[in-house]
Amino acid sequence: MKKKWQKLFTIAGLVVFFLFFTITTALALYDRQFTNKIYPGIKVDNVDLSAKTREEVKALFDGRNNAFTAFTFTFRYQEQTATVSAKTLELGINSKLIADQTFTIGRSGNMLADLFNKGRGFFGELTLAPSYSLDRLALEKALLDIAKEANVFPVEAIFKLEGNRVIDFRPSSEGQTIDIAKTEEEIFNRVPDILDRQVTMFEITLPVKKIKPAVSLPETNNLGIKELIGKGTSNFSGSIANRIHNIALAASRVNGTIVPNGQVFSFNNTVGDVSKLTGYKEAYIIKEGKTILGDGGGVCQVSTTLFRAILNSGLPIAERHPHSYRVAYYEQGSPPGLDATVYSPSYDLKFKNDSGHAILVQAYADLQAATLTFDLYGTADERKVTITKPIITNQTPSPEDRYQDDPTLPLGVIKQIDFKAAGAKVTFSRTVEKDGKIILSDTFVSNYQPWQAVFLRGTKE
Image (cartoon, rainbow, N blue to C red; front, top):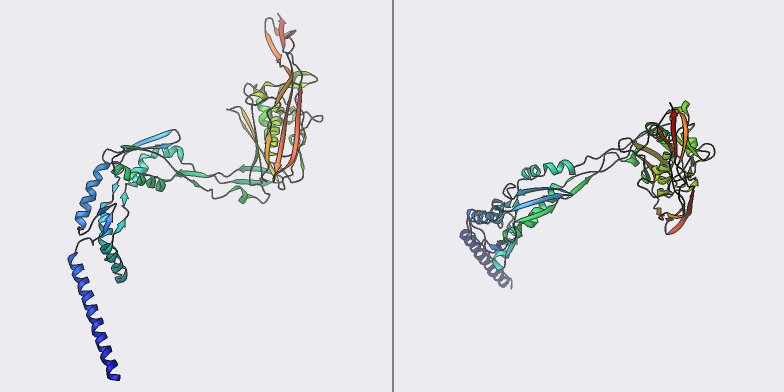
């Protein structure tokens, strides 16, 4: 019995040896047949490269690159464009890479992997995606002019607190740059159509990628001042120099104010005394039913602009008063009714901070553009603010112009000191929602008197 098993093992060993010898010999002969040639069944872009040499593969795909000669790309970013030829970009099939890749299949040095890949090609096919290339430096050069406009450096936040006022502030902002890698990808995606010779030009909208600032606003403070929660703007075009001076001065007195959570902001208390003693100049103000020269004319432009920021932020307004009549300044780029007058101690503008975090009030007076902007920064709590379009009713025409003699003015000189305005009742509403519930609903009514234009007529000889 023992001899019988020994005989069987011997025969089995011989069979295994024979099979191993046969297979290795066959593989050796197979490899020898394809020395310096691509193994069968290997394809790139549906082109069969079986039994071709590296040189033949390279020459084959070099020939296909002729399709790129007359092709152009137009790159677009907003209104800017740049047109460049595929030849300038040296766009084409990477014939050398394809030749190297296909030749190394079955020759990696990993016996099992090589055997598997040879088998795939022999019994079926092994298809590789085509490889394309371009000169990235040439692409960046072609996009240089567009990049000057599209590329923006990120801005780091600045937040310097002194006492209870921010004396140096800058919100952070993301930068951006043209995404060259994605642009290359977009170009390569067009190559099959180029090879099919269906078109001779493509337009590509340039992708951009965002660049985060090294320091964001939330990282600069622990007060919860993270983001913009409300903005208001107004225009003071046509203002006299003194009025512009007063606007800028009052805005600077409010700028940088921190309103702690739960507290009420008072415009009058924040701005302080408005007089020559505190730096204000004479400009027209409304007092006792007249438009007269007085210290601080233009301060109401500041309160009006802040009122608009408070409205948009969804914060509760504790006190607001409309002007006596419709002031042209406040309707430049804005509907009527969105104004707020102040005159200490009778009229104030107040809002309550119920946001759960501190709020920073920032004011920006752009003297060249004649615009004033208020930004409120804090922590957004998903409030949704809806403001209705103001409804104008009870309109009444302005009275006839009035002229009065002025012996201090030279004879024949006419000087306007008051401006006519039609009377009207203006009403609008605001609704503030949070978590699907209405947390605030208010209506603002402004009753504007009809106003007479008044002219001084010089009588001095």
